Amino acid sequence: MMRSFFFSLLLTFPMLCQAQDSAYVRRMIDSLCAPRYHGRGYVLNGDVKAADFLVRQCKSIGLAPLKGSFTQAFELGVNTFPGAMDLSINGKLLETGEDYIPNPNSYALHGDFKAFSLKPKWTDKREKLFKLSLQEKVKKSMVVLDATDDSPANQAYIARLGENPINAKGYVVLTDKKLTWSVGRRMYNIPILEVTKDSVGKKIRSISLDMDQAWVSNYQAKNVTAYIPGMKDSMVVFTAHYDHLGRMGADTYIAGASDNASGTAMLLDLARHYKMHPPEYTTVFIWFAGEEAGLVGSTFFVDHSPIELNKIKFLLNLDLMADAKTGITAVNGKIFSDQFDNLVRVNNEVSKLSSIKARGSAANSDHYPFFQKDVPCFFIYTMGDYKHYHDIHDVPENIPLTNYKKVFDLMTGFVARGLDY
Image (cartoon, rainbow, N blue to C red; front, side):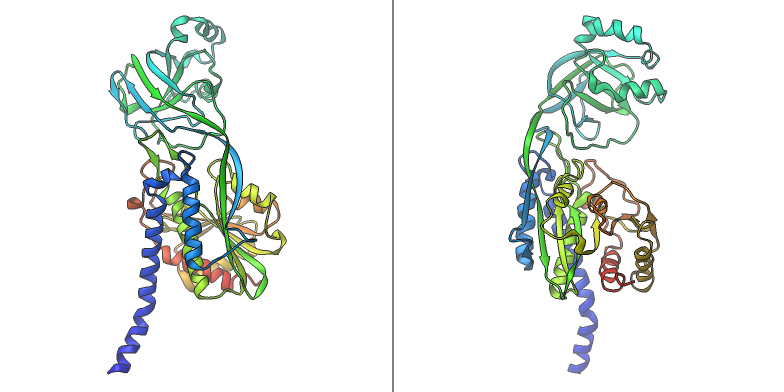
């Protein structure tokens, strides 16, 4: 009877470990998306505080610091929105992130303004635009443009609003598309607000804006690095960016649960796995800052690398791990075709994800600076029903982590069985 009990326990134990892994990943995502990290951006040092959290996790797992340090510091210039962020149109207070977003390169502005509607048919009339730029009523107004008019002249004019082409106080751009924010790496001399057309009336008469902004020329960010020694000198490298977009004013932040608290947490989970199962290859883990600002952290890393890049057997960059319902995509899958074939083979034998798609080269995540240095690598992202990206709804309670265990098993299986060809 006792022997039967222990046999049953052994059968159950892998399931318990799997559930614990998923629970751990959920906890890490919840922590990374907590208000104390301010969206892991550049207001109130949110990303730096998140980096310190990751260092504590690395130490608790028992990882070794890379070249004596768990961090690699660098600087960047960035535009931030640390304080007031209120927009009212026709007396109606709009919801930040839901009804409107500021262009990330916007300048501060405070006050009440009349609205001036710039008709799409005027946007290719140089003489008309020149005359408007000289009018005092335009100079004192917020100019409203309709981006739902997709004429080439109108779209081209909207694309150059940062130049303040008619000397207005600022611009409101009406859209029917999803609001998607980003990080500002330069600063205009005017504010530009993207506003959903459904949130305002047909005729905009007045605009009130109370928006703080601060340019930081030498923001101090840091990558987090760690490793587990292996039996071989060559390395497998796992990477993910932990930074996100940060605060859109004092009351709103973009949590970035899928992008990329999910990949960040998966790297921690992989580190725990390899700590319990010593790897064949020396295994390096890098959590990058500054990805959302233009791959700044990963570019700095390869230009000041504490490891020999030519010793990297393969690099796997993990981003957007929230929902693998329909599988994964491997950027560079069409470049490193032998490795991609092995990835598919391992999936068919082990993971059984419904689809693995190959893409060519793309400069869309932190694998790319390594690729430019001839490091063999994939950027892996999941495919499913989850659509929240760079918006206020990308929060932990919304991400399903569908097929997380399958993706995890595919990554470890590929390292174990897919690198020798």
